[in-house]
Length: 268
Image (tube, rainbow, N blue to C red; front, top):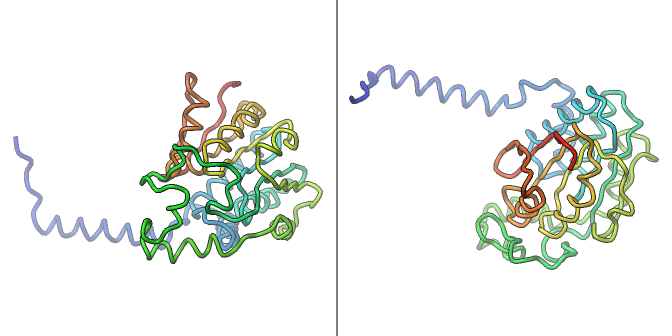
């Protein structure tokens, strides 16, 4: 049985309503957030390529950890300019929490082939098949996107001191901020906290992501938060996650095409 056709006038009105809702949503996409979270999104924007929605999700994760008393430090592997860690620190300060240790790991050599301390594997390609080297090629990703994104990433190579200065500007106690420079295979687990409340992984490649999971995820207690930044974009990062959790899958909540969030349900 064929579906009855909607009258033209009703179809027109419906389409106008849908367009209006979409317009409102784009202009007020953070209307559901409290003003303090919106302030954080605006503050960290110059220091991260992470979207406002994902910064908001980090703020929500901090709230969840504080509200439920999940023990441990906040850890990020792949810090770059420090925007995500800054968001975490600002939210902790807003919540009146300044006794948590925060760890950041990075090589601080920029992005692109020169910034990766590992030899990329055959799996270390973007979702569209671009390799690490070709992903920085304007002919591969499109001139408009290249001009918008790549200069912002490659022409600013922050040092560890740059990032430390940014993070301490939040007012968070400097002695609680630990930035560790070098490949994660050299710095982890020797310089890692014993317990991790939130673990955010953003190092793109298979070897680094697998190493981080092997050594850090067991330190996340039940109820702790795992964030995988590159699951949807970098095939190597995705394979590292899938290989590590093979045989005991966890629920990975999709936050846009790339990011995945999870709450640890059982000991690994």
